[in-house]
Length: 375
Ligand SMILES: Nc1ncnc2c1ncn2[C@@H]1O[C@H](COP(=O)(O)OP(=O)(O)OP(=O)(O)O)[C@@H](O)[C@H]1O
Picture (cartoon, rainbow, N blue to C red):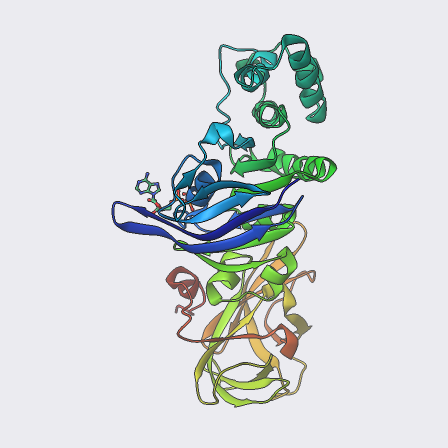
């Protein structure tokens, strides 16, 4: 399977630039996800790879094949690209059986009838639907239709699989099952896959690497654990998983860490090192499940990285208990296995879980609104 190389890709629609210099290389057999909020340019990037959109600038190569290179005026139309595609709407032909749906791309490629039968059976076998080859789409569940769409994308052994939110029409439980199944299938086939989603959980669960996009730019590219644990910006930290953001002032910086005086209660906490000058305004970011809980506020006042707080609300979400804890004038989200916490407690935020960002990397207004104490 070839690698996919996207270089300096830009796209303008009527003077409005929606993709700015997008650069990434997807390795052979990799499951690569474009993740970001609605309108950030994920689908446009995928459409440029598919050949459904022409980029304004840049190049896309798959293995040795140049799909598009605006400088050299090269453009290969979609049908010349040998890519398998599945969209959110599965786009199955309703008046055709499963087998007839799968035969379409083979007919276009002028593959003979006998060979078509073999390839169709093989593709249906891969997605576990061999028994349904004579059904019509309306006689199948959403999950089954989604598998047929995938089988149709795989039937001619494409070089690369392009998937645009293929699971978003399934209900929550089915979506999780389909996710695990898709991951297994992709690993078995070893097919290079480009996946588009705005669902961060889906991206974390499926991907070898994730490219986080925002407003037409790539913000961070890396494996899921790196995106989650080392978010490059406040935007990535708030979009991928939940995060507490505490404003403060950088008191000192050394090679091994920094000290920040928090605005919410005037306390000093040690954090990861920062490439910022002392005195600058900063935001300390901590994931809710990274905070350790000491019930009853037992820690001594002023202990380093121990935040004294009071439980405002608690809720049980099945696998965890979620609490909102008032620390000074901020509400801090805490996720823990401990039930029944009320009243005063202490939260330990170890320095290595305290990420640091400059405050001009602004916390999104909707996230900020949730963390301000009202009343
Ligand atoms: N054909 C078009 N003409 C004009 N603007 C477009 C066109 N297609 C997309 N856009 C704009 O380009 C931007 C990126 O859109 P795109 O569909 O790539 O985003 P997305 O991240 O895939 O969002 P979603 O998850 O909602 O599909 C948006 O601002 C969108 O309005």
